[in-house]
Image 1 (cartoon, rainbow, N blue to C red):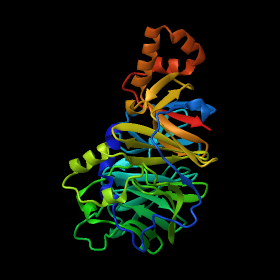
Image 2 (image 1 turned 120 degrees about the vertical axis):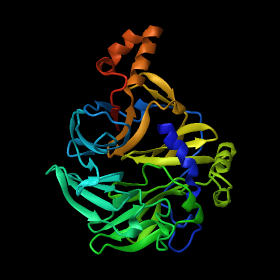
Image 3 (image 1 turned 135 degrees about the vertical axis):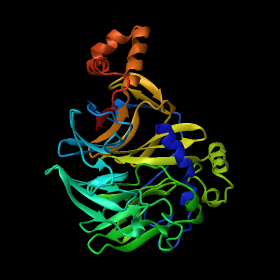
Image 4 (image 1 turned 45 degrees about the vertical axis):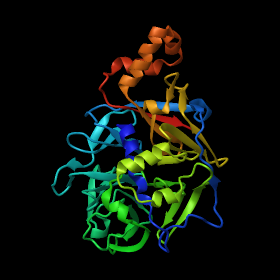
Length: 402
């Protein structure tokens, strides 16, 4: 499923709008940081970045897929579809507590979820019903305490972030309605006190009317900054109520995807996909997960998958085709194997997931190889977990601490 999500980013030629006065410029005279991203055949040894870890097996209702994770008030907020909900609360030990919003069409229900965000340590806001409504959930009161109807300009948005107490940024990848002439921009700054749009950035282009888009994260917050990234962007932007400016710029270099290729008209999705797979440029670069020290992301170069890590202490970037997990599994994975996968990040940790059947397969192979006893002595916890769970149980959430 994760590979399918990544492949869906092929259609990201939606981002080919021309620069105008309301769109962030691709060049900046005083960029705070610049990094070069280049495909390299490296192996990331996890202990070189992380000093500790925590494995959390998610118990309770079966989750179809874990798509987002946040940590708040000593609880896990999990985005993942079950029969009755798509946003759930767990303890830090993985015990199911409750769902936060029920699937349905009632007064405090939602028939789909676009995104959720922690707006402070005890509050979760949930964008739902194709961005027609915004729910506020109190972790202290353990219930929905507020719901807002959003204006038509916001409908179709897929992600959001709170910029201050009144103003929010909403992202939409395409027009929600071809008949809505006011539906012109990807980023809309909404004042919730007035329910009016105050600023707009990045025009929606004609190509966007014919595509859908499947990146899971566009907005995140770190160190007091509200940040925005979308596939094929020239870098990570800091977004404020009145401005959008580059926070980290990606040097174009020899691997930067040329704007001329993005702006070219394609007869079909398949034609654009073929260009991406055959060209000598990075493509499908998505899902920034930023902690205090590192920014993790994934991209493709030709037909291969890469993990990229930006070290914020040195402002350098390095790409990897393999991960050597010497902390938990004592195994090496190709990025295309879809085993350890970055989901999100908190200030002091990167958050990954792994499926129980994958851990069981790794341990079974060690038994065949005759290395299991040594592995069990070094890593007893994963062995106990593998024995206690079925292949189709919920994912493990792993926090790798910096």
